[in-house]
Amino acid sequence: MKEFEKREIKNGVSLVAVPASRFKTNEVSVSFATKLSEKTASVNSLLINLLASCSEAYPDMLSLNRKLEMLYGAGIVSTVTKEGDCQLLTVYISSLDDRFALDNESISLECLKLLTELIFRPHFGADGNFTDGDIEREKRILCEKIEREKNEKRLYALRRLEEEMFSGEAYSANALGKTELVKAVTKEQLKTAYNDLLKSSRIQVTSVGAADIDEIAGIIQSAFDKVERQYAEIEKVKLIPYADKVKTVEERQEIKQGKLVLGFRVNMECDDENKDAMRMFSDIFGGGPYSKLFMNVREKLSLCYYCSARYYKNNNCIIIQCGCEEENMDKAVDEILNQLEEIKNGSFEYEFKSSLSGMCDSFVSVYDDSTLLLSWYLRQIFDNETVAPDSAVEAFRNIKFDDVKKCASLLSLDTVYKLMAKEEK
Image (cartoon, rainbow, N blue to C red; front, side, top):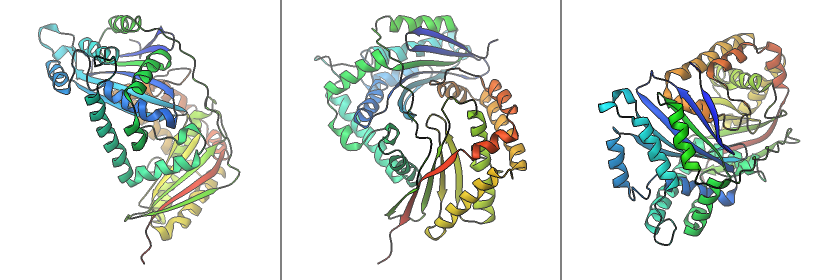
């Protein structure tokens, strides 16, 4: 059996189907990738939530929930994220696997039909626009979500680092938008955004489960036959490869635990053949419990409550997040840079072996969870080549020690963001 099958349904519309009969659930998502912009992020974020909440056939949440109950308690979720210079909007449905249904029902295909119903037949009013009631409900929910993010200080600090480090670049925008812009969105803007999303965005339908791929493709094809596509390939991210100087940003709030976030530029193209080595470097630097930052900055020197690194391949940057008291912040920055030098000098034999084992184990574990599998393939929506977890394992086993050592020399510190407690008067 194939690990997965990928089909082009229409220009810029693809289907990735992962046959799997070992799970109790089936997962299907429809994702739209569009250019990220502060001007459009709020309206797009609001739009995808509207599409996931009601439709022409199910005009309110009560009728939609009744339909989901009839589908053996299926669930619908919408998500908004950002990758590179793109905003990724997803409507996702999870349902019981067909083999548990009564009378040989195909729950997965019925759920897919419901998903297309929500996306292609929205709940419009008599004027052909989204209704005022639906819009106001989703505005309130989205604004509350944006405000919750501000109150989650670890996430808030990360967002602030992104704003400062990527100032003037698309990635500086919050994928969810801003509360003041959400409140100002009009029904006309939503209708325009909806038409643009169907017409010109990059779209991927991802399916994990036992449903027949030909039947899935037929439903998707039928839905998109009614859409006039004018898809243009999304422009490649214009990367800044090197930081000429370090920007330090300090902010004070009523908090108990300080947050320290460091952003490094990576002098490498997104599709560089060394991206797997850079991913392993990031893990060795600040990924697993064997990493340099965990073992030294956190455990040995006790400079941070937590200290982790993540590689963002579509932006070619590495961001380090720390929970840190103010008096330890400068010491933590110095030690983080010191551990980077350690890797540059080749002092990471133990970490290299541990990372190779840990990363490969994490790839294999993707096969144990249907939602992880769906996420695995969805994250590759921008990649030229789609690979299965097993293929990623094989690629990582071919990474050489010197490949990782070379990666360390490609980093330059761009921005240091400090969120500290207000000073006592």
